[in-house]
Picture 1: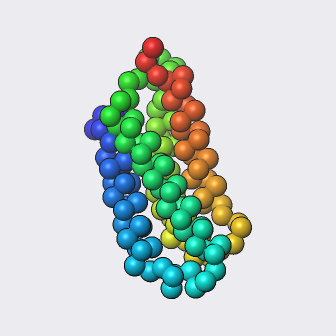
Picture 2: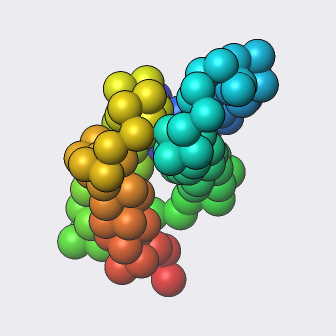
Amino acid sequence: MTLRRLHFWVGLIGVTVFLATGIYMRAGFPELYGGNEVVRYHYRANHIYILLASLLNLALGCYLSLGVGWRKKAAMVGSTFLWLSPAVLVAAFVLEAPKGTPDRLLTLVGIFMVFIGALYHVPGRNT
């Protein structure tokens, strides 16, 4: 499977998961957060973070063009971070959002993976 195709499928599956988490929240709110607005905002934030990571993968799946040499290697490192970020953010949605605590390590790691993955694609572009 090519790098571009893998990004496309990760993005497409991620957008589907985003829609599923939206349906889950729509069906479960307000019982899901029990009046605790912090929990509600954590669910919504993680929901949008899943969309962010998925759309970035989907865009790379449509438009990725790799450079050569070290640029290609940089893009490969970035792609690895970007492929894994939706899974980490889904785990954060499931495990961290219901707690409503400020300690959200999975969310931090997932967003950091999106950030680093995107930055590694900057030099990896085909010029």
